Image (cartoon, rainbow, N blue to C red; front, side, top):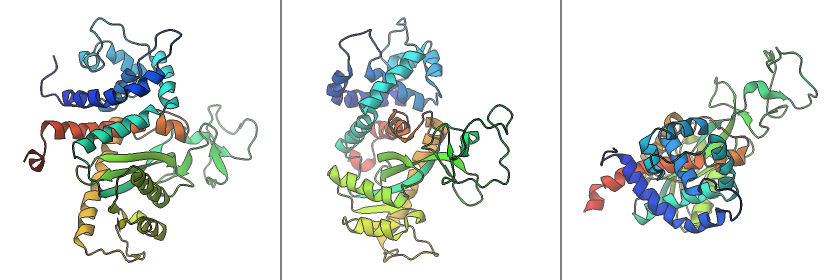
Length: 347
């Protein structure tokens, strides 16, 4: 029933190898007492399907799993086998969070790409994006407020026209870790988290992704820490491309201290800090670093990256949502590389 050239077949081939490498970790997650639960492998594969097919909730996924043969084949479910309940699905996700399975899964996907020589081991790019929080703006209250607010209509709404609100004086009662942020001048402020991604420049695969608060974790500082993490994984970074928001002294000096050549886009309003903007390598980095926007674009329009379904930075990062979305974006590109490798690789 599934076409032989369907890209999901190549994705499943890759995932079979990835999950086989994670067998030891899955064995630790299986309980020896209690009722049977959903295998963690199926939980991960379900998250991949939810990102691939833009499924917004566990309830909707379990409903579709009831009648979709492709979904059943992908999860190795027989056509007449009963599916799991959405409440059980949500409850079992706590095991993925407790064992940090999503991070290991992402690392194994990157390892598979490295084994195929699809990942550059020298040239990388970095960028950040805003992820809307599940909390709404009506949950933003002054920190000194106590008791019920009777200024609204009974549904939490209140008229805050002309009121100055900032992260120093206000916070969300639903998700205090979400902070007010905006994408640029003249744009509205929203409760957000910050997603930071590192992409290798050979095939545009994401090799590192983390979610941080929008306040207290500047993009430049997070990027320097990500370079340190790549070096700790024996990935020698040679150049690091970025947009003009990273053309700052802490970013440039932090990379040079680690022996990395910084390639941020320069701004006419800022000092270049001695960046060689005319070099050939700089031009290549500036062309390649724009590719990272396609990861964010696919993740937000298809994968569900635009808004979090969880509260807090840790759950937003590790509850197998955003890490799995970036893993799925990698899998889509890797499936194309697996079925139609570049000419140089074929030669």
